[in-house]
Image 1 (tube, rainbow, N blue to C red):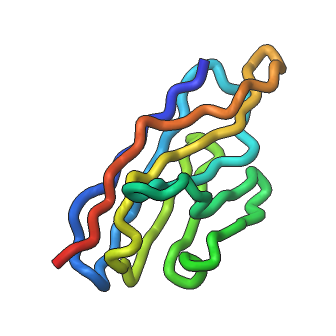
Image 2: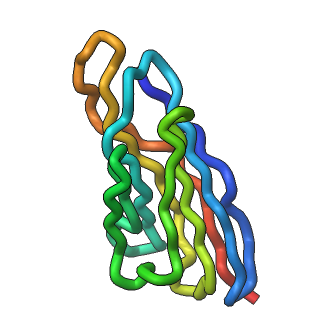
Length: 121
């Protein structure tokens, strides 16, 4: 099994910055794609950013240029640096990981518990 532990959410003023972290643990051989989704009240969940183990990145259009995703493969940890935050970025942010177990079994996508980001003055 894989567990994801997220941290870094909170309240920030418009224009401010936050850095989210998500660490995957368990009997993991490696994690290929790791990413972040978000869900705002009364809206559908959407992909914010994703990164492969090789460093290929994919961003939501509204976040490109303001958000940066990175990872530390040795720690199976993914980060999301969010700058110039706007009130419309307010949402619960969820980490995801597509991992392979030590046994070689390709595990189902795992979701974190979510961390709330509130952008408000």
